[in-house]
Amino acid sequence: MDLNLEYWQSNGKADIEKARSLLRSEEKEQKNGKVDDAWLLSLSSFHTDTGSLISPIFRPQAYMPISLPLVLASFMPHKGVKPTLFWHFLLQSYSAGFNHANRNATATSEKKTTLNQSLLITGTVTYAAVAGALPQIILWHLQAISAAAQVFCRSVLPIPLSAGLAAFSVLVVRSEESENGIQIFDSNGNSVGVSKEAGAKAVKETAISRATLFGTTTTVPSLLHFLLKRAKFMQRNPMLFASVRHISTVIVFGLMIPVSFSLFPQLGKIKKEHLEKELHALTSDGELFYHRGL
Image (tube, rainbow, N blue to C red):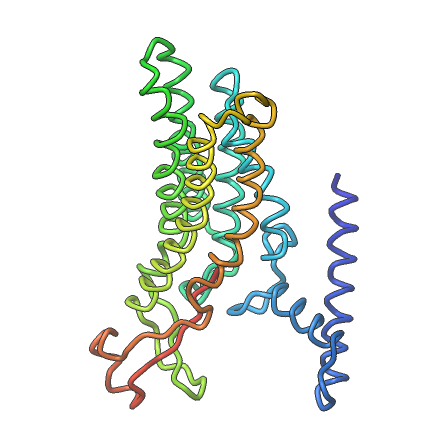
């Protein structure tokens, strides 16, 4: 396993270095397809703030192939509480890792994750995993509940839970941006200072985008499942009806990832009057910029 990971990382670094070399060699020439691909690879592989290499599993292009199986497994009904908690724990662990790896890193001078951050992330993952599995825990322990309550736990309760927990993970894992502030820049790219207001705005926008992703992914399949439930064609084909939720989850999640990532621009804007008063005199620009993170 370690050898495969090292091989993947070494080959990934080689591809990135080739991409950067291509960018340098073609810098003064007209762009072509290879240069565009090299540019995208370079942008998605290195952190905007630190310039450090992002782990391959937490890069934007890896988000769908890794998170989609975890989402499907988490939303599926399981025969017992332990499998439910296991898959929700994996999903929340990956989500927290992705949020942390793609945060705005100007909020702290520490390059490595501190003990407090590790404990905070662990607590967030544990809480979110238990809360995410709550509907199936209720169904498992209260098997005598009414049919309406079962429908509520299976189709309604997961919608606000998924959206809320996705936003919660971003808010907690990236809380240091709101507490310590992030760097803001003027229209010329010069650093103006560190703003807690900009940090709070960046975290809030990312939380909304992630809640939109998971909220929509749970809403559309549940709604489609409800609408098709009484269709005669589906009643005659129970196997097809059973797969509707899973197929629609794959489609909706895949379509919503680019929508969610682009819901707010990566280069965020904030008006000067919304910043701390001590920053007003440091620039004449009416609008400042910041890196939102992903």
